Length: 255
Image: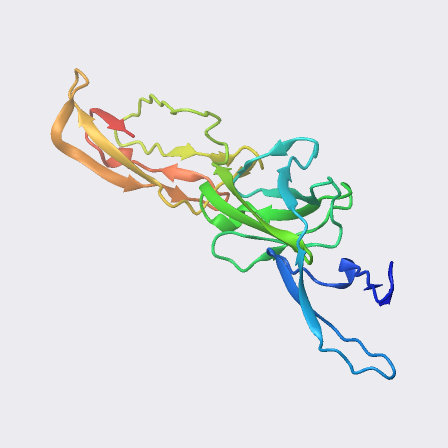
């Protein structure tokens, strides 16, 4: 301590940067002051406390392609990866470049964010939607920590949408009207295409059809129906073989 104003008065200045405030609320420190002077009896020590408070912070999520836009949730097609970009900063709008940021989803262990090489002051991570295994809405929890600053948690959601597909080039129902001579085979070929990749989709979860025999006027004949399975060939196309060569003459409805 150094002499202050007046006899017997001493002062000391503490730099709070030398202390830790933790990451939530703050930390309390005890100060003990002792005095001694030659030819005098030492006085009793006195103590006091200092509360070092954490600095308030903000955690926000932003559009990766335009970080000036703050967003609340993200959307991506199933099977694609998406960049998750956040900004962690104090109330003076100064971003941190040495914080620890992670996110959790699907009950997986925390996954690390990294400083964005293209957007200074932001943290980015790449999220693979295939990990969700199926399309739908998924919750994501982002956590940001830095010593002496408040820990922040951001809850957001990822909307995973279905991939765009076509069947025989159609994006809606496919209608077929075919006349087949009795005893002639006439298999139907279907191409189920991932239009984003321009690739045929195979190993389907469901690939079945239902058939019903019709009266000449087009109404269904009760009890004359059945089901079948489409077979996948070596070029990932699906064949519906109704075995027309074995069916009776008449009209049939397949769907």
